[in-house]
Image (tube, rainbow, N blue to C red; front, side):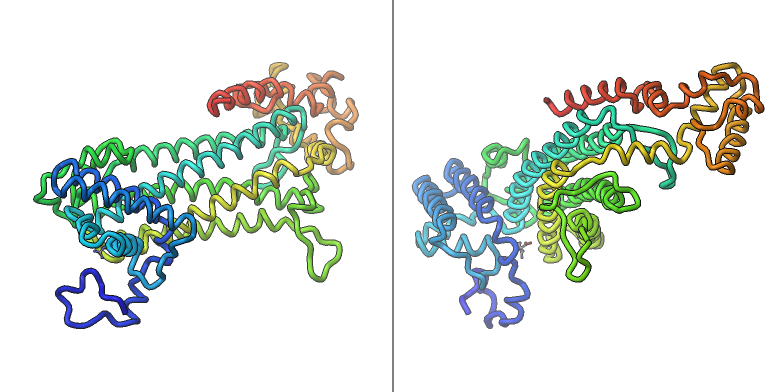
Length: 459
Ligand code: ARG
């Protein structure tokens, strides 16, 4: 086994099992670009501050750039035996430059190095996830634009409640995603401080310039406390919270789509390219994508619990437990990207079965509130109107009728405030058209919120 860089004070080589157990390169190898980016900033600062000779700093930077190019071209493979990505790159640099390479780690520890790497890595991931979630929001918004007149039942307790439109329903998700975008930006803003220069925990005696490295790496400022600089993983937790909420939103919509695909609802039909069959039942067309999204939501929530549990008992500053942060947050990031990427084309190819939505809205007495409101508008107190309408609904159920088909005599037997115009007042179209309160489902009101959401999305 290769000598460890820290082998000086040890009389034995590390046991094979411990090396394999300790090693994180299998999962932190993906941060190679960010590790090199951090090291280039550090080397630049060391040279500028005269902590190492300027020529050495330039040589180190060139060496790091070559290593990056070689990893990217496939010429240099990551060594699975290496302890982690930081050690691998530093060892490779020293292999190439000799003594000059050994100067890179002056005034730095792997503790501030790893902290800066994760921030740089997650900052890029946040940008990618932001773009994907935005694309999803735009997809839903465009679908909403086509369905401002598509009437469907709105539900509470999964019981048909009041009529809405499909556009209104979809826009509810657009607003959730807009909040998700806001949370991603907020997380990125709070995490955009630079831990580099915190050293192992207690800063350094060298005259470093932390502002320079922070600026070179695009951070807003250095972290104000070196202990916090190396031990803070709040940003991983915050990001995972934001990701868990994104998944929660995808999962709720997935659950609805799963129901809507069933023969019991038949409100939508998935494109054949986004559904799967059964190995035994020839008639089946299953909504696997949505079910998997619902399932993966639990997994992303699990990542959040991993991070919170990993941190809760840790004394300051760095502890090896913190190496566990990466697999959790990377898993959350990977799965959210995978889910959103699959969800977008699945939604945009989904067929909306408007007639079935409308037929469902025509059943279940979802215009009963409107019937009561009809009486209220003629002067009756709401509670009395509510009671009368309830009685009428019971009569309809007994006679196998709907409020639309109940004869006017039955209405007038309850109160002579009822006239022929009640039929228009309780027609589905009226019920939806007249719900124009701000944020309501009327086509007019929904078009206003679509315009507002377009503005928020910068469209
Ligand atoms: N692989 C380690 C991690 O991910 C890097 C930091 C190691 N620091 C140390 N003092 N052992 O956390």
